[in-house]
Image (cartoon, rainbow, N blue to C red):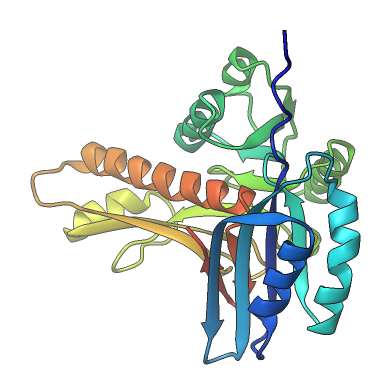
Length: 290
């Protein structure tokens, strides 16, 4: 019985740098020299900022190709163009921590997508300031961590959260309707690796029961925004937005239900794209290679 050949190693390269001639040629030459074939390539040159962004998914003809060796040999290309770059195995799964409070629709949606393989992630921990979804975490066999938050213990609670991020080697923190404002210090420590979801209406409704406020004003369009967490509350770089048209026939609860759906969709796409290295920061904006 003959054994099947080992699958070709696949990698994903993302980069950004000043938009100058020769970048694509340098990347292509690197791939040719290392007997690699492009599976998918996407690029964008921002004329406003003068920056160039690229994502290349490629496979190597060498079944023994190793990630660290590829990183080492690409280093001179990155240095020569002063690139900010990242190279990873295409099959690598990011370790994602989910944070939730008392609204579980986004948590439940992400857990289902994870369970059916729709998200290329691992979930080593679910954290909450309430026990409401402890049993849900148990059904997926995921450790649940209760970290109560009060005005008096906020600093200690965040220290526990950060310690868990470090001990579990977390790549991405997802605020799946986690109803606590993170301190400026924690936002800085999680910069570029924390995603939040919040409702976004035209007009905007802040404070308690935003969907009830929207219903009272007779809105025709509801939406949700998934963005990176920054010290500026709900103003981080936007990854994805989703909207739904509504009308006078929807009562308050139906409007809330529609809002839950768009929140789930926007957050799931943002998590998927981030964990597949499809999102690159461009100042206060993002470049998303879908």
